[in-house]
Length: 436
Ligand code: ATP
Ligand code: MG
Image 1: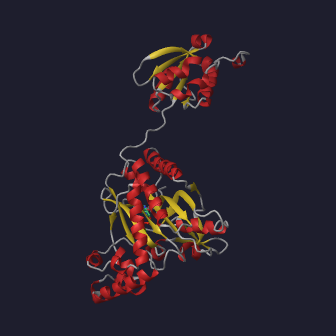
Image 2: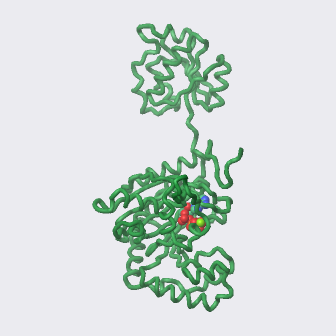
Image 3: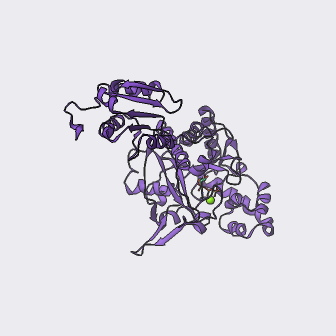
């Protein structure tokens, strides 16, 4: 049996890298006051089809849509924002308490051609600020994304490219200018972009076709078509980014792949990942909540691909290294179990092999990367002491149970903060129950 094409199992190093990205994002978004939401991984197809845009790649070719047994059309979510906005409306959260700041993490599904950095089930972290029309919200959600990249240690070599898609009048003027320009070069456009010219000319700017890209290089930019209001909005976002200390590069070619954006659009890009260089992307979406049947709720956010962020991590976070509890003979197994639970209750990861003599259990301790072995023989049990063998340097000492955590802390095996917790624990219960 093989996994479905474009899907991957997360095991060992791959899981720990993934988990580290999510935990870091959870921590940093918490610093910005975001609360975490989890919405279903499938929604009524309309949630995506109505909002992401008829000409977007996602809607035209990438959705996993199917009829369920009741005959309803449902879709595995290709992105997170539409579901978050749907949830805001469904849960009646559009009335009071805005803005709401939301973090999410989870799997997304797109029927794409699998390649490095591009999968059919992939994972995103995302941040949304719902119900805030102020440019400060744009800058803050971007600063939060930047701080996540910093905490992950991958900000070096990642650049924020930012653009504005203006307001509706700006876009109308710009669309007319683009239509005039591309119509003059119509025969040189790819077939896809000829269709885009009819339906959504701005989407041509996002084309991956080499011929289109050459034309796009000389196309007019939106900067010449912004209304004074849209220009001011953009300037304010950039000013706040300066104050937040987030470096950026203005790039008039950033339009984003989904239809719901206005004003701010941005991507964090790197050249360290080959062709799939966008790690985090987003923008302002002032009309989306209304599309879901809610009131006007101007919002801004981003999503980032966890696989691409994981790939950039310089190091794999270490697996947990437990303490191995080792009874010398069967007679010590009972006290060893008591010790095992004492350690766990004190917050120390601890394991005991289910079977095997001293030698076999020592071998397993090394195989699972234990930092220390706590060995219990007959005389140790009698005296309420244990042998602590440091598996890094091979040194061994005999310590009383009350001093065990101190000894483990001194050996660097456990956090010194745990020390007091086991004070006073008795290896052999006073009433001698362990005899059974
Ligand atoms: P691309 O231009 O790479 O197709 P996109 O515009 O479709 O990206 P978004 O919808 O903005 O991407 O998704 C945000 C982020 O999610 C991307 O920047 C990327 O890091 C990640 N991502 C998108 N699609 C995939 C995929 N199929 N596999 C892995 N990561 C993905
Ligand atoms: Mg895509």
